[in-house]
Amino acid sequence: MDRIGVIGGGLMGSGITEVCARSGLDTVTVEVSQEAAQAAEAKVRGSLERAVSRGKLSEEDLAGALDRITFTTDLGRLGDRDLVVEAASEREDVKLDLFRTVGALLEKDDAILASNTSSIPIVKLGAVSGRAANVMGVHFFNPAPVMQLVELIPSLTTSPETLERMQTFVAKTLGKQPIEATDRAGFVVNSLLVPYLLSAVRMYEAGYASAADIDNGMVLGCGHPMGPLALSDLIGLDTVRAIGISMYDEFKEPLYSPPPLLDRMVDAGLLGKKSGQGFYPY
Ligand code: CAA
Ligand code: NAD
Image (cartoon, rainbow, N blue to C red; front, side):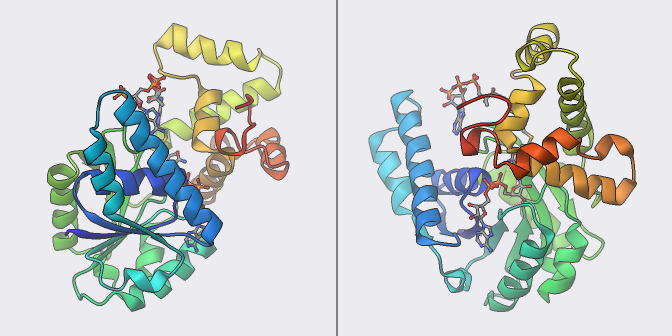
C-alpha cells in the first residue's frame, strides 16, 4: 500500500499525514475548506521544521516529505488510493457520511478504508461503506509523529486479510507498534485513560485542588509526562467529551459521562490547545 489518503487535517490528520509522507508514501489529505487545508499544511510544515531544527530530519528530507503530500478539498482525489485513513472530527454523523461516500468512490476492490476514531463502533462505519470486509479501526495516538502505539480494531465484518495487511503496514511501513483491540467503545487505551481524565475534571470542578496542583500531582507523584488536565487540553476538550459520550452510550457507566464543566467549556469554545484556551492558556 503506497498511495495513502487521509480525511481531516486537524491534530491527528496532520500528524498521520506527516507519518505517512516521512515513510515515503504518496499522501493525499482532504479537508472541508481551503482555509482548513492550508492550516493542515502549516501544521505539517511546522512539525517537519521542528524536526529539522532538532537535528532529526535533513532539509532535503523535509522537502521530499512535503513533495509527497497533496492537500485538497476534493474527496474525489481519494479514488485511486490503496488505503484511506479517516481522521475527521469525532462525530458519528460526519463519519457515517464519509464512509458512505468514500466507500463508493474507491476504485480498487481491495482498497482499505480505516478510521482513526477514538470510540465510534467500527462495525457501523463498515455497514454503510459497501465494503465492510475492508473497513477497520486504525487508532493513532497524539502526537502521531511521536507516539509509537497504533491500536488495530477489526470489527465483526472485517476480513482477516484486511487485518493482516494493516498489521504489516503499521509495523513494517510506518515502523510503529500495533496492538489489537475488539470493537468496543474506547478500545484498550481510552477505556483506561478517559475515565481518569474525566475524574480529574470532576476533581477540579469540585474544588479539590487547582489545575496546576492536580497535574503536578500526577507528573511529580506518578511520573506521567503530563497531568490529566494538560493532556485533556492536548487531546481537545471536544474530543474528550465526545469519547466519554460514546463510551457512556455503550456501557452506561457513570464514570464515562462527561461532567457539566466539560460540557460548558466545549459550549464556550474552550477546546484546549487547538483553540488557545482550555484548562490553561496557550
Ligand atoms: N508533533 C511532532 N513532534 C512533536 C510534537 C508534535 N505535536 N510534540 C512534541 N514532539 C516531539 C518533539 O519534537 C520532541 O522530539 P525529539 O525528542 O525527537 O527532539 C519530542 O516530541 C519531545 O517533545 P518536547 O521536548 O517538546 O516536549 P516533551 O518532552 O514535553 O514531550 C509530549 C511532549 C511528547 C507531548 C509528552 O508530553 C507526552 O508524551 N505527553 C503525553 C501524550 C499522550 O499521552 N498522548 C496520548 C493521548 S490519548 C490519544 O491520543 C488517544 C485518543 O483517542 C484521545
Ligand atoms: P480536530 O478537531 O483537531 O480535527 C478534525 C478535522 O476534521 C478538522 O480539521 C475538520 O475540519 C475536519 N473535518 C471535519 N469533517 C470533515 C469532512 N467531512 N471531511 C474532511 N475533513 C473533515 O480533531 P482530531 O483531534 O484530529 O481528531 C480526529 C479524529 O481522531 C477523531 O475521530 C478523534 O477521536 C481521533 N483521535 C483524536 C486524538 C486526539 O488526541 N485528539 C487521538 C487519537 C484519535
